[in-house]
Image (cartoon, rainbow, N blue to C red; front, top):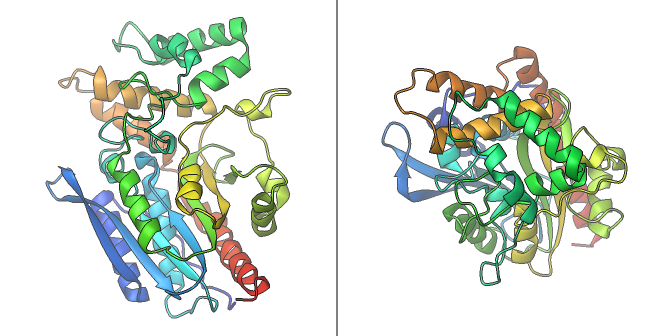
Length: 378
């Protein structure tokens, strides 16, 4: 494939501007555009909240790439900037034969518009993809930390005191127990952290509609779900949910490197003897189930921001702003800005790294999928 021109992803001022840029880039690229409007919520200006989907390439192919942004809404601006820059850089450049790319913008548009990690129902979309016809998972460990991470008052309980209480919990029960409590997802506390919901969220149903229509007949699917927060500042951190050394893990490793897919960081998996939390309701698992017999390879790709304690603090503040903050508090805007900064640093150096960080990730997946398509003799 020809060398792509360099273009630094531009950050839109807000959700409305990000959506407009994405749609303009997709239209210029000649993509087929779909728009799914939220049935009950509006943006800050009274306008529509939408999930926008751009599809390009061979509509009848059996090999495709699905690229998502804004699963955790507040993390949407970088994902949107990456998607838009990729569409712009590919203006006039044909995809490899036999490949389709579906770019889904702002899976959680409410969170994107209102600077929140969760949906309007406080649901973490990356815990919402479970079978709700079955009994809901029970996270007993979360019940033990709920009152710690969901404080009521802002003056009597500080971030430092919350952190100290979590350290005390770890000292008593071990890091594995703390990691499972906070990372597995929970379904019993609707106002708590990592809440997976009581039914499929609207975003969940839209994604399934996109899979059913735009990716019908696909037998080989690559997935990139852009996130921020975890890993080294400005660097990609890969969360591949395929079993290590499984066929689909090896496919993704061929694209991005085995060392990248097995890298550890300062969250639980870095500790000797600590296993990743048994996460429930992952979006990736939902895609796998929806695609049936198709082969699905890919990863959540985080762009690292700050130390885990700061990111966790932002999640706690985000939840507090929804349920416990005094609406008349003059500091609320500053608190909201602190949440945004934890996931989308204002640092020019962080933002400048995105192009060097993200474009090679996408191009490696595109090239790998094209090779996969050819290897299958399609």
